[in-house]
Image (tube, rainbow, N blue to C red; front, side):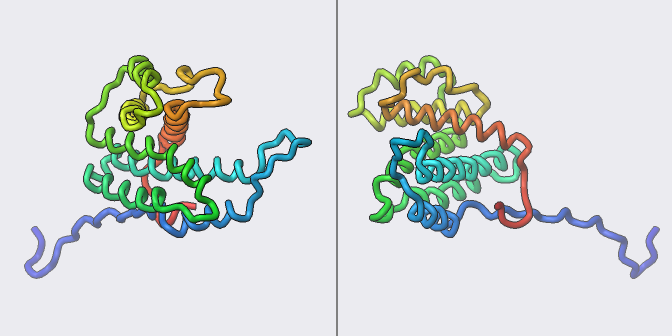
Length: 210
């Protein structure tokens, strides 16, 4: 029995780790790098122009950063409302009005990321179909004039991918010289699948992610 007036030792509280997510500075740094890059195609060189390689890295950085939020939700570090708020914060940055000098390039990036944000929300809400073959067939049947319905369908595929489904390489057409918008969203879903695999051991980090 502890002596009167002597406090018994209390168990130490676990160290609270924190993670600084995608922010405006990170976005602006990528834009600066794009401005300094060339997108001109050299007929004598088979390599992709530097600007497009950087744009691909830019796109991957956004996808991985957002799916880290989902991983932390899956690991019960965040509840649904916290995850949705963090998702909203990043969406405001990524989907903001593009700068005039990079307008067309950033608009294409934003169009592909529309399915990423929609998929994450659908996954967090827990309301989505899981029959990928049926969903792909449905999405392919929609014309370019039904973009909202196509996005809804692609988002269900993306939510299933986040939940562990294998997609979407087997559904991509062999000839993607002129991919449809739905194809572009399937490509993003495949990128999401790869990102989720790369984040299988991700939890929390102290300080800012590099």
